[in-house]
Amino acid sequence: MTRLNLAVALDGAGWHPAAWRDTGARPGAIFGARYWADLVTEAERGLLDLVTFEDSLGLQSSSYTGPDDRTDQVRGSLDAVLLAARLAPLTSHIGLVPTTNVTHTEPFHLATGIATLDHVSRGRAGWRPQLSSRGTDAAHFGRRSTPTLTPDDVLDSELIAKRLRALFGEADEVVEAVRRLWDSWEDDAEIRDAATGRFIDRDKLHHIDFEGEHFSIRGPSITPRPPQGQPVVTALAHASIPYEFAAAGADVVYITPHSRAGAVGILAEVEAAKAVVGRPADRPLKVFADLLVFLDEEPGAAAARKRRLDDLNGAALASDAEIFTGTPGALADLLLDRQGAGLDGFRLRPGSLPHDLTGITRALVPELQRRGAFRTAYEAGTLRGLLGLARPANRYAGPHR
Image: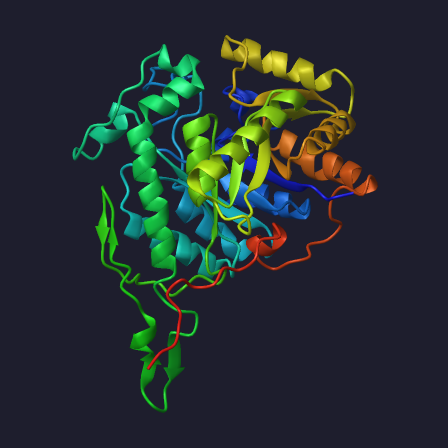
């Protein structure tokens, strides 16, 4: 049996808006390093491949198109890249994948931030580029406006993607520029020879001379090439244009099917997107399905807990991802069935923290191990290694005079 890759998406008190009011939640600790350290070390205890950290340029909102006035839900977050860097020394194997906005952030800053994370984690960094269409986000910077989504737009993922086509085109350029900056130092550019007084070989630092529609970047980076060569780039995608964005620049794409048949259909769309952008056959794109999960050992308990949170929130939980409530054994059945559709792995979103994270690490993982579907020890020291991705060659390396 092919082993699953398994990731967990961490966000605030959990993915249910009322999770901060759940039994065992720690709302007073959400903005402290210890809270996140406990979560990530628990995820590493469960031998998970990676954790992702959500981020945004505006306060969380119950509305997709802009801010709201609710005061009964968690608002506020820590910077995802800085948080991941803080957690890196406390972990040794698990991948750390922060989300960053690419609509209002310069590629040079993104490249150095993720490269730095890869250095301090010794090769365990990833990155999820995310675009922003909210006018309120643009107002924080005052340099540009962006397409504005309407309430009708958010009912159709294809319509959203088409409305934001220009932003996806810009994001394509950001990812390409960042990848080139990661390669702007060759692996052996640092000499560090005190006797000769040579710290670097200047011939092995390269101007990237990137010219796009939105950016013109000279380079090189200020940060040496990351330990992985290229940190793992991931993308969340729901429609054809985002699938093409992922196919062009990502190593892992997170998709959101709501059934096995849905997974089969989206996998076909991802393959079509790879053909459209001309992705080389020898450059794999891992596909993970997202699931929002509530886990309890007792049958019916997870569904009852979700209903209590729904009541506290005043509305049933809605999500782009399928919502699972049940036992770890039932979730293992679902994951293995969906794996048979061709998925490489799953990114699980715990409904409530820490309850549903420990349900994953201390109940789901042992169940998958009993079935031979998940590792029993870490077998690689880098995130690329955990995902079975080769370390890429430097595009600028070659014979030197």
